[in-house]
Structures are given as structure tokens and as C-alpha cells.
Image 1 (cartoon, rainbow, N blue to C red):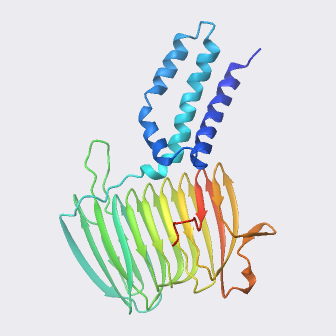
Image 2 (image 1 turned 120 degrees about the vertical axis):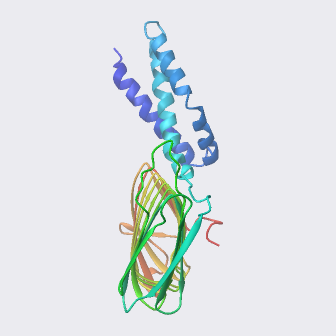
Image 3 (image 1 turned 30 degrees about the vertical axis):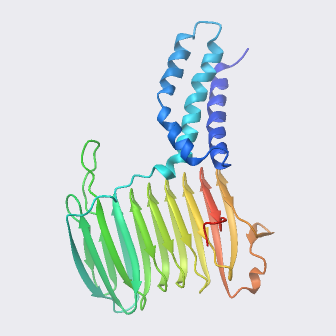
Length: 318
């Protein structure tokens, strides 16, 4: 006798996995998967068919259909999540204000923005500058001292049916100070051009957003990236030895590695993939050929949960 409860659970899981595998393997294009989600009412049709046919000889087939359809929708939703990030960066702030200062020595910088756009660049010297604005409501708040700069998204509730406030945050950081930098982007865009910066710890958190991080020519101690339902690309530096942790959850992460940087990768994944070319297996890690002879090295740990991390994808790192 067929255990229908286990059968339907198995069909649901298999359908979700199949949908994720098809998108991950590029058999189905990401855009096609996103558009297919517009057909979500099919879920209710399949569920209704299962109920109507429950007492007939077609009950098992109807139950399989009712389990498979939501599984396919769930798998497609998970894989399409990075491309469905909420974009609140299209409204122009009504007004903006600028504040400037300088650091006496090593400093800590915390930047946070929700529903808007973050732009970070560098300039020579020890001075910093912050420009903030908001289309609706208060702009991000700025707090500063001789060794710390904090810019935080304004506190306000975002309920369905209310108007989202698009925030704008432009920050210029000094390349003459060693900085510990934390940047968080939620439901928006981030463009962090940190070329030439002196960075100790760099932490980047992205939730339902899109971030481009350029570390060309920067010095770096450690990089931590936590990416959730988002799309991120990062260009690593080749001017120092550093460690990096990349945690991708229902996210797409692209990592561009300079040819003269020795790269070692350790990875773990759950329904996710890490792809690269030109690396060789050494113990429990993958390394660039001649890793030990490189002038500078990056030890990278990658964790992927239902998403992808691409190292030097063809055409994206030129």
C-alpha cells in the first residue's frame, strides 16, 4: 500500500530540487524562472483539483500534481530571489545635507542603508565626507568622532500600503587611515569603490539588494560577506595577504581574482554551487597553480545555501 503522505512529501521536495537544479545548471534562464513565478495562481488550481478528485480513482495523480506544483514554485522562487531584490533607489531625494571631518589615526566606520542607494569612494588624506538625503522622511543619521564614523538608516516602519522612503548615502573615506569598515545594504543598491583603501576588517552584509565591491589596490586584513537573497560582485586586491569568508544564502555572488593573487578556497554547500576554473585540488582545498610562489595570498572560505558563488566567471571579470 502506498503511503500517500510520504509520496506527496517526496514529490514536493523532488520538484523543488529539480527547479533549482534546472536554473542553477542554466537549463532554464534566470529571467524565464522569474517570469514563471507570475503563474503562481496555478498553485491554487492544482490544490483545488486535488480536493475535487480526492474521492475518485485519480486521487493519487491529483495529489502528486498538488504537491509538485508548489514544489516547482518554491524552487523557482528560491533561485529567482537574487533577481527579485527590492529596488528602492529610483526616487530622487528631495534634499541632501553634507558633513565632513577627519580621523586622527586608525578608525572604525559603520554604514547602514535601507531602501536606497549607497555610494562609497576613497580620497587621499585623512578627511571624510558624508552626503545624506531621503525622498520621504528623515535622512540617515550621522555620528562622528576622531576615531569613529557611523551613518545609520533612519528609523521608520515600512508597512505594506505605506510609501517606502528612498534614501541616498554618498561617503568619501580617507585612504591615509587604516579603517575597519562595516557596510549593510538592505533593499537597495551599493557601489563601493575602495581602490587604494587601507582596510583592516571589512564586513559587507546585503539583504535583498545589489552590491558591487571593488578592492583594486586596497590593503586588506579580513573580508566577511553575508549575502541573503541578493546579488553581489567583488573584485579582490592583490596587494596584501588576507582571509575571506563568503556566506551566500539564496544569493548569487561573483568573485573576480587578480592573476597575480594566490587563491586558496575551501567550500561547503547545501543545494548550492561554487564554480571556478584553473584551480587544482590540494588536500581539502582548491588552489591557483603556484599558490606558494605568489607574492600575496587569499585564503577564502565559501558557504553556499541554495545559491551560487562564481570565481572568475568568463566574461564577467575583464
